Length: 295
Figure 1: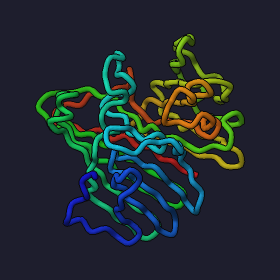
Figure 2 (figure 1 turned 180 degrees about the vertical axis):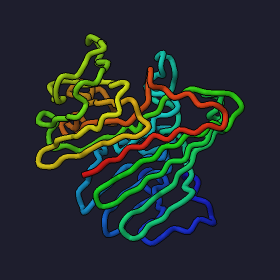
Figure 3 (figure 1 turned 90 degrees about the vertical axis):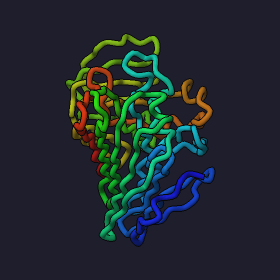
């Protein structure tokens, strides 16, 4: 069982902490405007359902246990993305998504809810990344917007450089008829194994006909996911990278926590600072990256 929130934290109506899947603690939100769920394991948003319409995608085969990342929702990649800038770091995507976070605040006006989660360095994190830090993560849920504010502070006495990503998975009706637009003109790297890495320049909306793994750099452009009759907009602040990903048939089948046929119903459009867009913080400095997800 993960650690409960602070004993002096009073939760407002519509917010409760429960034992979720695998016995992991989850913060459940149920207000007139939306329902949602955030696991303290990984600080992981697993659901945002405004007016009964689920926006995020969660694999039916997702694993809920300590030390394992949850497949779907919004995993947090920090302090590196994938294997890091040089590709040699482990675990993949850093330790934040498999570390227990603390719930330190919760407020609501009955229509929206803000949850405040915190993560600070520990002996365990310093063994993997030898820096002192504090992360303040604010999850704001409402009727038409999910805002994710990810703030990193350097609490040590030396500068450090980190990568970060809010690895958001979105539900779509069929990836083969889904488009992502708004990133036209941006430079990207094609990270699919065996592909021409590039850099390339996007010359039109992204459509999906096979495995897709594109890392867009030096762009703050807003992306729009057109998924059947509805669309989802992902606007970013403090973010210069965006990743668009779908595993397609073979990679989905190779992942134990991803249903073989589930690739048709999801797409990742991620808010990030990776590779050349990695962030360097001097002692005492702070950086905030925000994703504004609207329907």
